[in-house]
Length: 189
Image 1: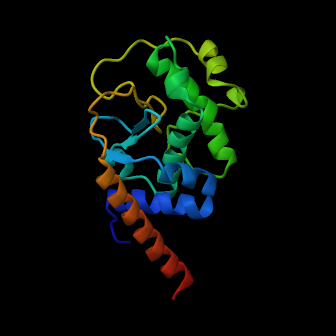
Image 2: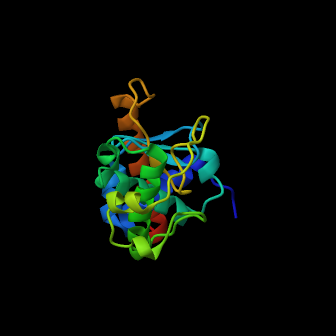
C-alpha cells in the first residue's frame, strides 16, 4: 500500500467523518486544523485543533478520525472553559475518560493508550476529576496536552499561529476537493 502524507490522511479523515459520522464531521469541518510538532498528540482550545504529524503518521485513518472526534468532544463539552482552577493534566485525563467511552459507543476507533474505563461511563469530567488520584506535575514542552494518548485541551495563547481567513478558506477548498475525489472513487464515475 502506498504511503500517504499525514496532511492527506487528516483531510481524508475529515471527509470520512463528514460522510460516515456527520455529527462529528460537521464540527471538525468548522475547526481549523494546525500542524504543531511541539505537542505530543493533539489539542484544542475550543477554536482550533492542533495535531502532531509525528503522532498521526503511524495511525490508521480510522484512528485519526477517532482522535479528531475526540477533540470535537472536548470542544462540545466546553472542557477548555470548565477547567477552572483545576490542574491541567488531571483535568484533561478526567475529560478524556468522560468522552472516550462515548466515542467507542459511537463506533469510532481510538489509538492504543486511550484512557478508557467503564467505571467512569456516564460521568462528567468534574465527577471523574474528583475520583482520580493526583499526578505529579510533568516538566517540559508538550507534557500537559496528551496524558490520554488521544489529545487534549490546550490553553489559548495570543498569536498562536492561527491561520488567516485566506488560509482557512484555502483549507476548506482543499477539503471540498478531497471530498469530491473520494466521492468520485466511491461512486466510480
